[in-house]
Image (cartoon, rainbow, N blue to C red; front, side, top):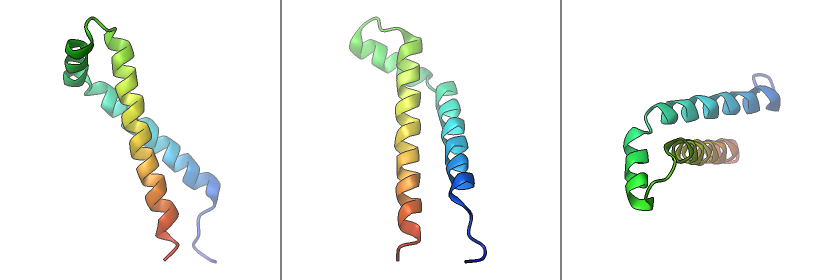
Length: 74
């Protein structure tokens, strides 16, 4: 079992990656916010941006966790 990483560092790594992805999506949210504001009327751009960032980060982290969980079960 040498060379395996414990769960703690892996979970921390996924958390850190999710945070970084959410931060990046928040910075690039401009066009998406404008499009959603157009669709839904005068929505608060900060709320819409936070929703987009959270959704994008959660979808990506779910995909990464799914891939990681199936990587060792060949």
